[in-house]
Image 1 (tube, chains in turn orange, cyan):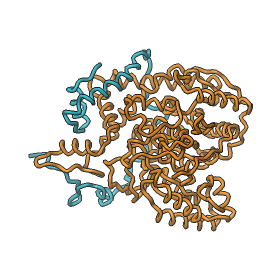
Image 2 (spheres, one colour):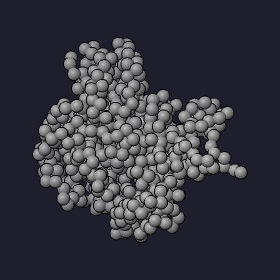
Image 3 (cartoon, rainbow over the protein chains, first blue to last red):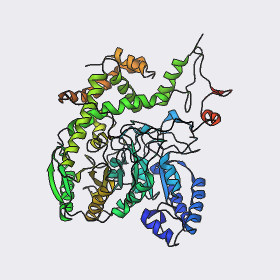
Amino acid sequence: MTDLNRLSIAEARDALRRGEVTSLDLTEACLAAIEGAGALNAFVHHTPGLAREQARAADARIAAGDAPAMCGIPLGIKDLFCTRGVPSQAASRILQGFRPQYESTVTQNLFDAGAVMLGKLNMDEFAMGSSNETSCYGDVVNPWRRGNDATPLTPGGSSGGSASAVAADLCLAATGTDTGGSIRQPAAFAGITGIKPTYGRCSRWGIVAFASSLDQAGPMTKTVRDAAIMLGAMCGHDPKDSTSADLPVPDFEAMLSGDIRGKVIGIPKEYRMDGMPEEIEALWTQGAQMLRDAGAEIRDISLPHTKYALPAYYVIAPAEASSNLARYDGVRYGHRAKLAQGDGITEMYEKTRAEGFGAEVQRRVMIGTYVLSAGFYDAYYNRARRVRTLIKRDFEEVFAAGVDAILTPATPSAAFGLGEMAAADPVQMYLNDVFTVTVNLAGLPGIAVPAGLDGRGLPLGLQLIGRPWEEGDLLNTAYALEAAAGFVAKPAKWW
Amino acid sequence: MSIDTTTAARVAKLARIRVDEAALPALAQEFNTILGFIEQLNEVDVAGVEPMTSVTPMRLKRRADVVTDGDRQAEILSNAPDAREGFFAVPKVVE
């Protein structure tokens, strides 16, 4: 077999079980692909030694007849996940040199299932960004280009390294995390699949916290089937995360029948934004038609508070971040500033945090501090939490009326050029998450599926939003959409 | 609500992030842009609406009140920028 790094998880699993390939073969193919892809800047900490060791162990398990679906599958892991003994710094200078003494629950679950870690993936600093331009490791480059135009494009963010690595076949799949769209927006920009499960499905333990009431981990994969396989291995109840759901994890892959006859798919009118590119509008209409052709009923719905999701998010997420990031004080881990003669502990905190946090992180920590400060707490923070209740209620009402899933565009544009947003104010960048952020605020599962190419040859994605805890049903609808869209394009290799 | 440089300096102080005097006007301007965006929330009628505390309606689980971990001093200190004699070390805080 050639190009083993190009396989999907399902293909690799089947080949491993048939004895046609070993995990070590798969791992070597990925390590070679990573070696040749420095220009993408996706992998930032390489763990080839660990990968080979895990691959040999996986091969032994497979030979012994003990082969869970993820056994022997080489993965990239977002730098936000704490991995024992391996640098885990959330793409921030403030965690320079940090080597966790413990393993995040999600990566432990994957390793228990036999998965192989190739290394850590670039991302926006503390997952704050939509273009992977806030990373202390530098920008990630999208393997996709506008035809023959060599302008480097963003892979989106914050899971930009994950998206770029999966799209460029540097690994079979990758972990991502999603606080406002950080799995789904980069998946759409890179022509891959990414699912954010229901809040509570994946344990947050050992994942560097950004906004705890919104953060969820999820898989970023080449196909919907792979997303089903990998999600099943990532999630499950964890006593170490008090918000982890004590619910059985169904066999998501077994639920992929592709039969969506009689399902009701909602089309929310509020997602038709002014100035939305015609191609996105057209793709959305085509997506609805594909689901209708597959036997679903398409129904116009209203989610009246959609417009207020982004402003509510930009109160709640910074507020939680300002609290979570208070732990970076130069005392217990990571960077500490050099102090001048006579500097006390306050100077140590202030200098450490000024040196350690990048501009976007500082901005959000300070906005969060402001909205939580005395006199503004009610006007900003409590009001945003009330609006969040209304946003969730919008979804509850349409689900109660019989809607099974909601179809929307994944992003308001295709991937844009690195640096193109540099002159814009921060709010312009925030608008990238306009279609995805509602899902985090309501705690729902959402999946981005590549559905077409724009006029310049860049991938565009559609998003499906499901009922809480019904990832299996959502994945099945996505599976039907994937089959109908028939997206098979890959970026032409230039790196 | 417009933020001036005095307020920006106060917020930076509360957040324990050193900001140069010269950078305060630009910072205040950024805050105003973001807060201006957030002001839209004032259009929403939230009378009688409870602030969300938990996105999934679940009771936090309780566990047995027993020691489950401990004796990991070396691991805990292993990442400290300055650790001495089994403690985290910081600049002098009392005279």
